Length: 226
Image 1 (cartoon, rainbow, N blue to C red):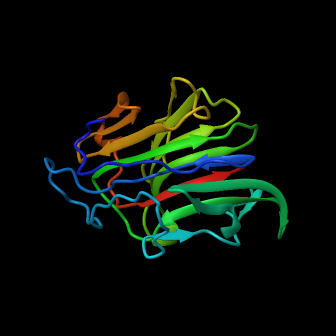
Image 2 (image 1 turned 120 degrees about the vertical axis):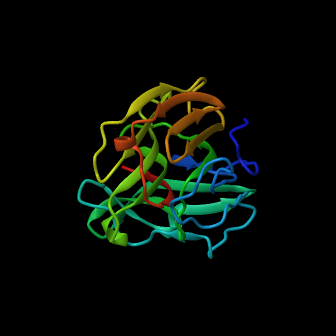
């Protein structure tokens, strides 16, 4: 896949009853041909041969809201053989019946290419996501760029973007062979004047409307939740 990146990405998660096989390596950072108006942390590639705690924060002991049926648990984030695995399992945690896994970057990133190689499991009621986000918790407007797999239908992935909390930019696209049968490459290229999503090197969606383009540096997330 050639997407103006400054490096390569490789494998990510696997295994478990419900697992997001999310990133064997990840690249984020400014594309060389566009002007940069958003402050950004340096580009990086992570192949998950080890877990860089200076780069990643593991969510633990809380949930995003009442709509989430699980509590983030550090026990649902595992690293083995160059793969980061996020789990989801029935386990009573606080007021929820399930435990789930999430990691997020500690730094924020702006314009650039973001790519992950992922594999999901299948199952009803589960959301496996690779996305960037910033919002009120960080005293910023809600901007977001998404890849989301609802694992009840592993033949598709939804791409979307939110600008100041407004969505309605979603598009559901096919994933040849399914998200659960093999690792697939998911990437988006975020520039000042356009946003493009790719699946296995194929362009699947483009936004050029200035009103629909995020404009705030965001953190990188991988999550598996119900």
